[in-house]
Image (tube, rainbow, N blue to C red; front, side, top):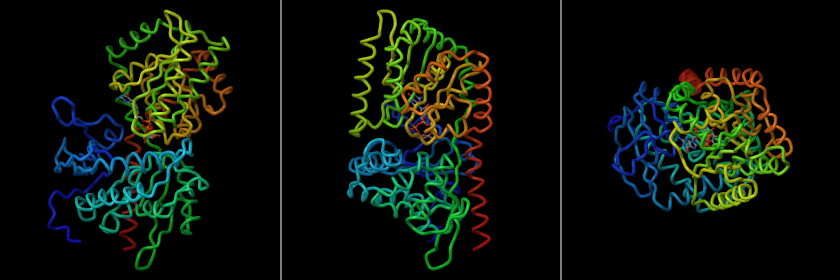
Length: 477
Ligand code: GDG
């Protein structure tokens, strides 16, 4: 393919389902989205003459490429049908539940798959058209698993990375997928395939061995090249993180600290505040957390005048049936627990079905004595790390599910199995009663990890692996 005739070539191209911008409701201006990935890649994009290929978030919106704060944005149009079949269907009702260990039943529909293939092709073509000769394409996440192979077919000269933000399931579950070979081949189009946990990379390598019969050695997978020969794809863990310093900076602001005090007062100054912050998603174990808390009230081990659970459940994927059902169940549970245990002056669960600005999130982190992360399965869980980054006083306790990727790094948290309600109850009590000195010891070690391994370190290590892959490929070319 000739690369001379096309304008606006970029050395470094990110391909993600969403563009890193949102259009404001009122003035229609583009604003940077608050997400962690956007923050993570900002310096890289600026340094490297970057472009970003993605969807603007609204169906049937046809937009020309435009520049935004130093990044060239290439919008992909998705029709209302594409959104329903590729995004809500295959991505969020097939892959999401399957990859989270079938917590909800995945639905396998051939029309969804067909839409997934054709939308992936559209993203790949846009990326192939914008990347410079010998440049780099970095594909993000499960909505775009076929893009690496498609880009390689169109542009064999570029180096391709892929990062998988969610878990990769054990082979026994993965093998349910009717299109299991095509997805593996799609991912293997990348030179480097990044996962959150060592176990995810291991599950992927096993699926490749079982389904495709390719050899794997350490992190390397030997992939045949069309027309003869082989190349090596690297499949390895690169645990993602947060911009820890930016959370600490917000936590230092006097107005945020004042807001944290106000939150406590608004709850009637309970002795202890427990906090959960999640997208309203069935993977996050919100019901398990509420069951454990409700039973502690019922047993008389906790009292509403003493302890309140604040649960932020930000609205998510509301058009997918399983999410609408989950919301109903959670709201029924909150209503029952509050109806039974509230007093006029105190509430058991303060349930908030809203999204909040980051400053308000940090004020909540500062107000919370115990952070509850009880995910049944979670790629990483950034909220856990954000709580730690905000705790300037080295106090507070993180209760963390072993089934969240963060557990691999955060061994000084109180680790729990959310399915074991008895164990979860005891651990919540232990967190509530934990002496200040022990909180300090644990918190200092947890914070050290989050600040040393922040999102900048994550993107640097991934990109260094990609650079090595490029050098290897050049040496063997
Ligand atoms: C996927 C994987 C992996 C949430 N509500 C509000 C809000 N948030 C922010 C949090 C955090 C982010 O959204 C959520 O990240 P998580 O990691 O907790 O979970 P997922 O959304 O499921 O993310 C996950 C992640 O990708 C990254 O690879 O860790 O495992 O599932 O940053 O703070 N932020 C604001 N208001 C809200 O109401 N401002």
